[in-house]
Image (cartoon, rainbow, N blue to C red; front, side, top):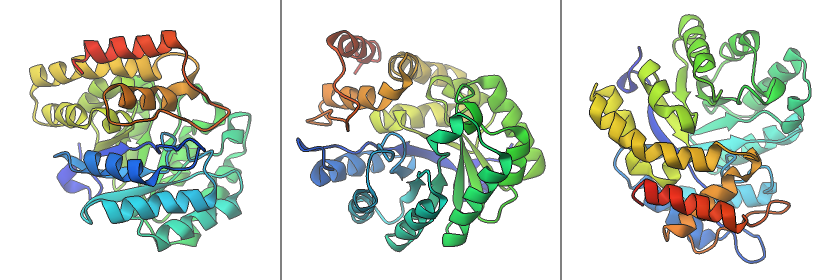
Length: 309
């Protein structure tokens, strides 16, 4: 198993949120405070900005650029910034990549367009990534979507083709199913051992860490960064009881945020948790998403209480 010391991008990364003002525009002050606080936690290697948790699917190009500019000038230069690229158009996605490179991104993460959930040809997936890679010289992370997301969850054949592309250095492995995680990890280790497989199913971190990983890129680390780092380090050092103690905090929160339908509410739940613990003043999300109902807020508060927060 490749250790974090053996991979340049190894370690724990937090996928951060994008706080919003009353008019739904990005709140730059709150964004800076959020990212600064998370990035200063010992053991956090870097941040994923403009990811799903950052509502990249609803921010326009100018807003995404502003988010990156704010975060880049806020966090320590030693923090690695991975920037999400998410667009239905490969041409627009390539422009996003150029924008990110010009604004200090250290690496990119290419998200599969949502339309691929219906059906997509393997050659279309490859072509989309190739056009983005050609736009910059930045290292690139792939995104492996949950097993229930249709063709957005890449087949083994597609994974094998993607990891052979130049610049690909890692995979945010979010299959959300432990058997598939292990199968994909073994596949990549055998075919492209230079590519880091980052265990990123928030509900299954303990199990995935034990199976082996180069690190993790998760939004739960934006809520409880110290705990995710503690879990990762405990597994890496073989301290089972410490890992179980960290998992006891992770589990109720992961289930409450990510383990219930609709999955599209995960970012709203994450923001509400950050508001409940006093990190954010507002848990506003972009329409058509809206505020959570009172029962769901109570469930999140219960999970926070169970986690000792």
